[in-house]
Image (tube, rainbow, N blue to C red):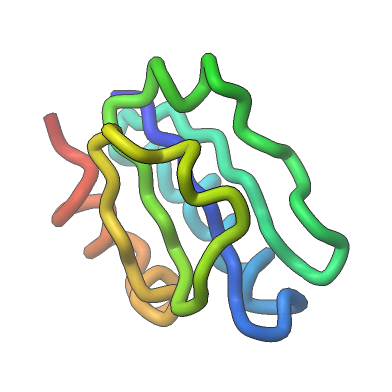
Length: 100
């Protein structure tokens, strides 16, 4: 399964990057290929390309705030997840949302 994700938090510092790291570290355990875009204090980093988005089986928006450029994800299999859910139990996120 191919997943793309966007992580963002209100301050754009710690939680944005902690959530991205948790997703990347857990993905191999669930046989998931993942690419994560962060939207933090430094702006958009590791920006997802249109190709990345088009070829993803699922899009995870891991944020409790409005992300930048949300229109890129219209018409995709998009799931909104609280950043806290990823930080507290990333395994539950993969089990609930990242299966074929």
